[in-house]
Image (cartoon, rainbow, N blue to C red):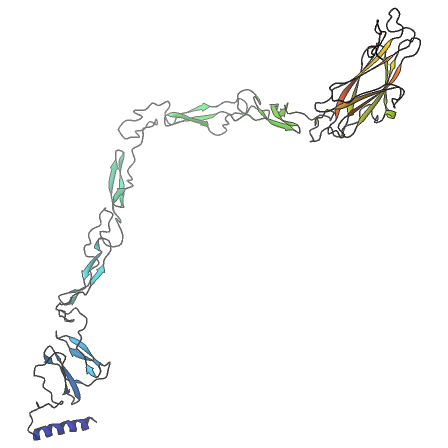
Length: 495
């Protein structure tokens, strides 16, 4: 194919010669690389390999003839600054020659009028040697020296030798008033001098502050290493030894030493004052409360807390089991819940004085019944004698005392029998304290004027919450009627 192309080209030149042409008459195959041109202008040409090509006008001169190209093809070229560039084929034509990137060679490779520019810096070195340097100088690539600026290590907190360490291995002599030593450099400062330190003067016979005098300027009660006996053998204590420490006597101690301790309840003299268990008290308690107790002979005694006692009927929790009046034994009068079961109190003799009895109302619905004989002394000798008056008056007074506050008791007295039909019935139901019932009846000379009394005691509440004792008194006596009317004290003239 190449041979055929050359034959065609030679034939074309032969035809032009026959016509007397000089190559300037408009033939596209004619190449004139020496004539002036306009930048970007293109014309056909023949390459050195006798291939059809194209040359481009650059900077007013025709470029080297380049073979025809396909889109995207690239080919070397010479730039306007005489560097080796690259041109790219577009639409079958070679584009402008593009300069390469700048290199370190002393030339203007990228055709911007500057030589070896913007090639960057090298970075290297540690410590005081850390620096930047140009990568290119006078067209030559330059290495970075990591030890540029290095110097001997000094105590300044810097890495002078550029080895990654600071103030390493630096020591020097140092001294105090007491002697010489060695110190080292740490963080730019000389520290940790090993010379003996100047100390405060103490009472040890030595020149602690290194001023040439021992134990000066201080008051010494003793001198190291003086020692003396101390302590006591009183009680549980054992003597020891006291050593001189910095001019003053130290604490008592040593092998076998036992010093005073806080007194304990153990029948021993713990604080070594010649007394045992003195002044020791502590809190104590029983089921009924708290108090204080004292130590005697190693034992805690005499607790002042309330002591539980046997439960009695008084409305209180005597045994401190949180129950009031529980588990009580019945009193001597029980069982006397009805009049038929009334307990006999004996005789209340006329003018013999007041009789007193103790009873108890228990929790629940307890009722107490009693009977007593109001006994006339004589039916022929009246209790008093007034002219014209022979029939006496008799009075029985029954009183109930000891009623607890807030509780309403009822006292009822019947005469004759339990129904009160044949005798006198008296009842006081209003809440009183004490409860009182007075009963009177006229007597007849020559007849037995004694009466049988039935006494009922009960709490007005239907259910008692506590048990309470009470006192029952009976007084039976005779009196004279009124000397004018002949009536007994409880009777009126209208009756």
